[in-house]
Length: 264
Image 1 (tube, helix red, strand yellow):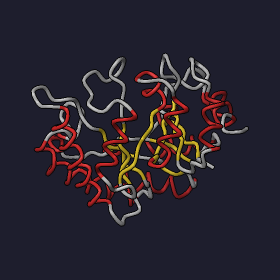
Image 2 (cartoon, one colour):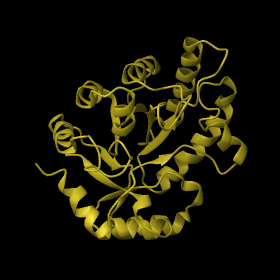
Image 3 (cartoon, one colour):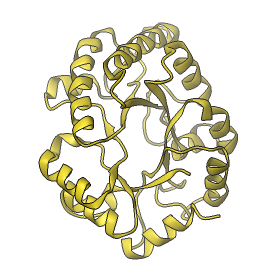
Image 4 (cartoon, one colour):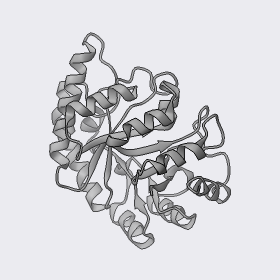
C-alpha cells in the first residue's frame, strides 16, 4: 500500500512545526522541498519524535550560484551544469541521508533556444547518469519530474509521459533514477491520467497529486481521485503519494477527507 504524504505548505511554522502538525493530523509523511532553510538538527528531532517521514526534498545547494545552475532557468539540459549539479546533489544527498529521506526530486530545466531537442535530451541523459553515480548505493533515489508548459512552467523541456519514459530508458539506471508523476501537471499536458500512470508504473518512484483547475486539494476540480487512488493501489505501488497542492479548507477539516481517499 502506498503512503500518503501531506503538503508542508498546509501547515504554519518552521519545518519541525509542520512535521508535528502533519503527524497530529494523521499523516505518516510530509513533503517540504526547499531544505536549505531547515534547522537540520531540529528537523531531524521532529521526524524522529513523531515517526513522520520526509517524503522528498528538491535537489539544490546552499551555494546560490550552484543552486541557480540547477533551477529551471538553466538546468540539466546544459553541459556546464554537470559540475554544479555534482556538488548540489552531493550536498542534497547528505541532507537526505541525515533526515532519512529516500527521494531527491530533479527537474530538466527549460528548453534551450538554438539547440536541437535531441542534443538537449542527450545532455539531460548524461547529467542524470552523473546523478545516478552520486546516489548509487545510498538508499536514496532521484525522481525526475515532467511539468506542464500550458499553465505553470512555460518553456520547460520535459513535458510528456512518453518522452520521460524514453529519457529514463536511455539513462538506464532504474535503481537510481525513476519517474515523478505529477497528476496535476500531466492532466494539463496530456490527460489520460490512469492509463499513463499504469504504463509508467515499472519506473514510478514518486507521485504528486492536485486537482485541476486551481491546483488545490482533490475534490475541488475535474479529476476523479477516488478512482485514481484505487488504480494506484491496485497496481501495487508502495511509495509515496504526495498532496502537492493548496487547500481551500482548514486543515482540521481537510486532512480527514484526504486520508479517506486512500480507503476503498
